[in-house]
Length: 390
Image (tube, rainbow, N blue to C red):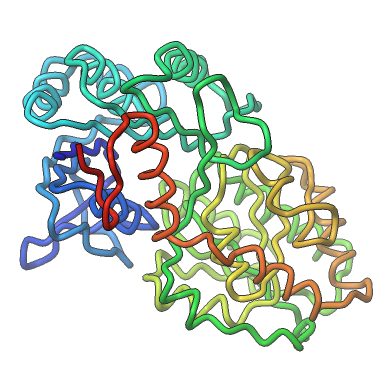
């Protein structure tokens, strides 16, 4: 079976012409590729090389499209003005394959859904944002979810990134998200016996964009400093994105600047080495489905302080089970919770063990096979030796 995956993540070429991308995207695309005989991967060509990138699956044929100009409304206008180019480029590859996978919310991914439906291809749609409406949910997000629900079933496999006992909607299945391999799980052996460092070491992992709430985290650190937190904890911000320069400028204007550092995007090995030195993670997203960073933290026995969005409540559990929940966008609540974590006695050994136990079975290999099983069941095909067969 031949697959076209329309992920449309920003990618760039190295000096030898190989394609790279950031975050867990290359790893998840390799997981999808493992289910099929061949893969064509539609990406966005980045104008400047990134840092800390990972190679895209070597077996994938790459279709590199122009990146729409601007952000938000300006980007949507750019897509509309260039609609013949995007539709024509997608149509040429979709007509030649058996299965189309699109990751949404995404304007190009949405076009992929429509074209796959038009040519009646087998379709896998993966909604990566928060299925539950939040303050960040746009009208286009609602249209995308409605379209998924309307066409769910038969050839159309609809997945929502999250976790729960009840499906998100009729015909839509929950699926977790991860960038963690079996090898990383085996090699990441936490020191369960350690408590907090002095000063404590905190980490944020993820894209530096507005919906991730990193500005909220920085302002919470500023509040801790102004209110006399001593010793002041250290914060390591791991990742890159469109807001990085703005966030760095903001940090440099604050009296707590010496307590915050930016690493940029890290490869998997460097990320794991860095997390192994941390005490816990803080993920203050304003909207989220199922954050890969939660599992990256858990494998090192790090509890997570995160916003109560998406699957956070199911993953983190009750307060103190595997971390802590705060309302999204609430600087005061975030600062207060950090202060209480640092000040109150707790059984760190048991807490770290619970985090590690949760991540067992949440690897890329299990993720790909879970999606394969859903597809096999719905399409009435076989999943043999890890591949989908008619």
